[in-house]
Amino acid sequence: MFGLQGRPSLHPTVCLTAALMGKRHNMGSSAGLVEIIGLTGTFTFNPKEGIDNPVMVFTDDADSVSKPSPRLCVLKREERESYGFNLRVERGRQGHIIRNLVVGGVSGCSGLQDGDRLLEVNNCYVDDVPHTEVSRKIKLSGHQLCLLVLNGEEYEQAVSQGQDLRSLARAHKDEGCKPPRLCHITRDPASGLGISFLPVEGEKGHFSVSLVSGGAAEKAGVCKGDRLVWMNGGTVCDLTHSALNRMMKKCGNHITILVIDSESEKSYMRRRMPILPTMAVPHNLPHRARKLLLVSGPEGYGFLLRLERAPSGRMSHVLREMDRYSPAETAGMQDGELLLEINAESMETLNHEEVVDRVIQSGQQVSLTTITSQGLEFYTKLGLSPLLFCEDDGAEKEKESGEASQKEIEGLCKPRLCSLRKGPLGFGFNLGCVLQRPGTFISQVAIGGSGQSAGLIEGDVVIEVNGQNVEEKYLEDVMIVVRDGGHFLSLLVMEKTSYNKMRQTDTPANHVTAEVKKNIIYDKVC
Image 1: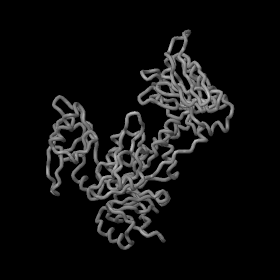
Image 2: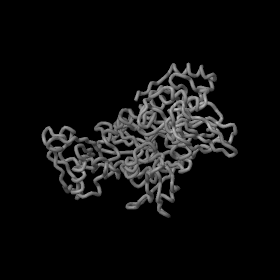
Image 3: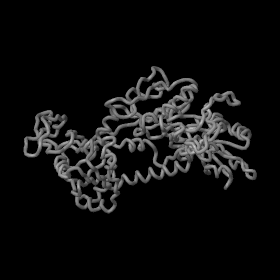
Image 4: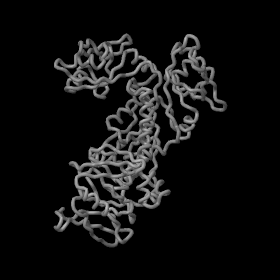
């Protein structure tokens, strides 16, 4: 998949449609022609030999096109009420698509529209997340859900222009805004819980945190000046200070609270976004669900699955009798754990026979999500799904992930040398250009192709091809350089915004190339 997106015609309004005429031939024979159909006339040019899947697309100057406007939709539902929409993937369309809104339902009242594309679920970017995982996030949201969506037409236009949707979603937020923290505090024999709450003057239902230095609350991740949002499963916005103190006294030796720093709270309020535990980073939680990966041995997985009734009357699928040295024991399975998921599918609505069938149908490998009975009771009392916080999603993992993401973002702002080898999808990307200007950019990257493996991202500006600077070359000239490289290709690329900022300081193309080579990030070679 390597596309041609052409050089502008002599007329500024030409080049709206492209059609491939004829067949591809060897050098020396009459080559295929790409016919450019304009408003006032046509012309043709030879796309040269060896270019995979010629495509002709022209984009307007990005500065002259209005930016897409994501919308924040907050949905609230009652017990046993649905959110009133379907989330779909459709052939020939990109993104997670909102469909089948219930007239007068929760979704319609929130501002969702048919055809909207989903960018974020509860402040988590999901456009590049597998569809099943996105659906799972929505199901785990409980009775309140925040969706950041983009109108279908704006989404498709943004994708065709190579815009970075993640940056678009990020621009919707205030810089420096941090997620809330879900903190579990265990009473210290000497200093107690180490926390108290003060009413914020002039703001009913808002409480500021006061801490004992080095106390239990501070060790659990609470910070001085934090704002209290939620305590033991209930919001505090409707409580008086005296009612909050009475609640504190009933907590005993443990308390679980949702807090956020004051500046981030203001940001959420400006955007009219609720602060939810489903958005939180967990701190010091006493129980976590666990994900176990089992690979079947000669005698199977080596455990029994039984349906048992808990003292509370709740029926659960319980893991029992792990064989010694079995795959179950090797994976860390503990006797008495409760089964929550099989291969990321919830077991909540399945009967025992169906659950057993799911394990058998998994073949030689199965993924199980489990939790202790005490852990399930803990999350039930809080009104949260135990699947929200697994052991591999802990605070340290969140921190490492955040640091990695930041490094990745910083990396994209520097030049990257991407090496590609032609595969079944060609080089696995399309090139585009701005009308009547030299220079090219990555307009599309094929999923699973060589371009994606090498680290190309839609919107990247192409600086060099096979060591040759192409910043001032038109697209068809760049294509010739690509073709001459045969089955191997080396591209020096850079994220568009960062590239434009650099060009403002180093106008000559050769100076820019010399400067960027000082800080090249070498991507993996496919």
